[in-house]
Image (cartoon, rainbow, N blue to C red; front, side, top):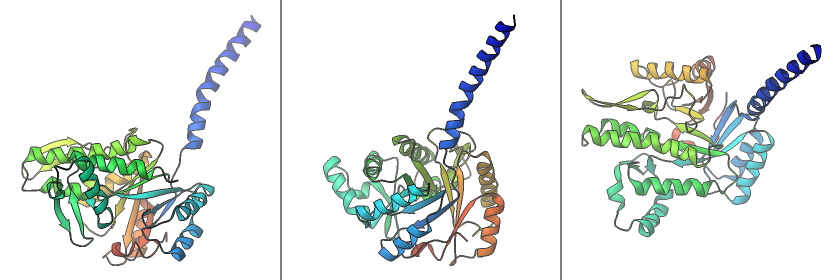
Length: 316
């Protein structure tokens, strides 16, 4: 009787052990961000400073174009040594000057019947870039190709910029509601499609706060609700991080509701929330860091959004 009881206890113990061990391994592998740096430039001295500042748990955002393979590898080696993540910049909602020729060439090879004018919505005069409609297959296919090309480099993920082009889709008076809905749904799908290319990669979404939540209202006085990016729940293809750029710059019901939502997102732990403040805005630096840290966000500070290619951001 005692032998059978002992055998039963050993059997139960084996079951418990076999259940716990995989979870423990998963927890050990899970990357928990503790800070971030952002630099779009290629100045060798600034790159050396960036490398020296890499710390455990950091997410380091760089612009690959303009960097040599040796420079990228050097940063990647240091990041991996420090158990940090090196991720590459990718604009999904706008076509910039640097990518312009590549996209024109792509259209000539894969969609010669389509012109750039068919795909662009308006021009961003500040950065001399074009807002793009992500519901257009040619642009989406080009972006997925770029993702795969970037992943041939020793990077750990992507920084998805210009997601806030979706704000234009939502309010575009030239489009009827169903047409707006089409492009808003396409942006949500694109973010998840990019994550699905290589699910182990770290995806950091910049802005696009209108997409965050169970649903997105598309319209004016009347409109329609479409499924949003619910970052308070687990989803295999949700972004790993969300950046609130120009945080605490504005006040009002909408941004305050989004701030409360981001606090809950951070608490749930499925997606980490980052903040980026600027000297040339009406945000006050000390308050920015105090509010960010009190909310559990991961903050960084720069002098201006137009100088991210010239200097490093700061973590305090």
